[in-house]
Amino acid sequence: MALSIGVPCETDPDETRVALVPDVADRLLATAEGLEIRVEEGAGRGAYYADADYEAAGCTVVDRATALEADLVTTVAPLPLDDIATLGEGQGVIGFLRPLEQPETAQALAERGVTALAMELVPRISRAQKLDALSAMSSIGGYRAALRAAERLPKFFPLLTTAAGTVRPARVLVLGAGVAGLQAIATAKRLGAKVFGYDIREPTREEVESLGASFVDLEVDIEADQDESGYAEELEKEKQERQPELLQPHLAKADVVISTALIPGRPAPLLINENAVEAMDPGSVIVDLAAPNGGNCAYTETGEEVVAHDVQILGPTNLPAEMPVHASELYAKTVTALIEEGLAEGAFAPDFEDQIFAESCLTREGKVQNERVRGLLEPEEKDA
Image (cartoon, one colour):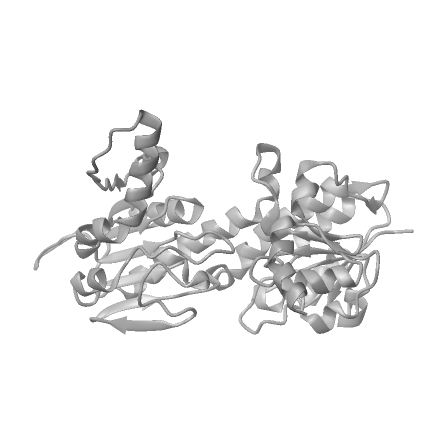
């Protein structure tokens, strides 16, 4: 029996991405004989892909119910509970499933007997780099954050010399040197700003400096007489606790702050307190990429733009959706790579002993497989 893959429309009105794009679907169809890709009518519209583009690639344009009946359903955001209720045992779902933020979705999938693979749970190992959807989207988020800041800042980013005089470059401070932070640094640097990067992890210094930015050192003086290992641990703890205080003079000098310190499933650490915002120049901009988890700034409001002490504070939740063409293309490539890893004799039959599938598997055989997500659900089950 041929494998069918469904691509339903995203239901969030602000989600413009699509799980598979025509070019990637075309390549996927060429890898497995008899493969069928069912695309819901209008699924690619937000990313500027017409139904005719999918048909030209060999896909079939169908209604939503038919797309959801496929053996394997691909999605960007979690499916609504109403859609999950239509799924049956043996079907598969691949997508960003937000298991730590929406564990009830995992429970619903398990109850329907669905095998669900969460793209955010794909292990970050070398052979899984082509499956790393989180990094792909984080890179876009960092890029868009720098552009947002440049658009809102009432100053030039680059150094400019004009007949009327010289304009000094803007000072941009990026907090967090993960994928999003490094892309924000690179983009702000290309725009001509004077860029500074900070991360609690000292090894990131080399990456920050390789992009032409200056690494911010936070000096911590503590008295300790333990061995080197114990001292290092105490120093790290003290440094983390005092980050907002230690960062304040660096924040006060910045025209733009882009903060990216975010751990999935946990509240974002406070890095920018009220005093730091008050110390910034009027018109300065903060783009808080940790907004979905509460934000790194004390004034951040998730999904909103606020002004405090004449500082503009942006709390975006889905910057990749602002660049849906390339965001969809990159996401589709990671989803397709995961599908191809699990293909065997024309069927999707992942080896759950493989680290990639063992760790990305959210639900299987009627159970929530991820231990951390189970831990979030157990208190609810005990209260029931």
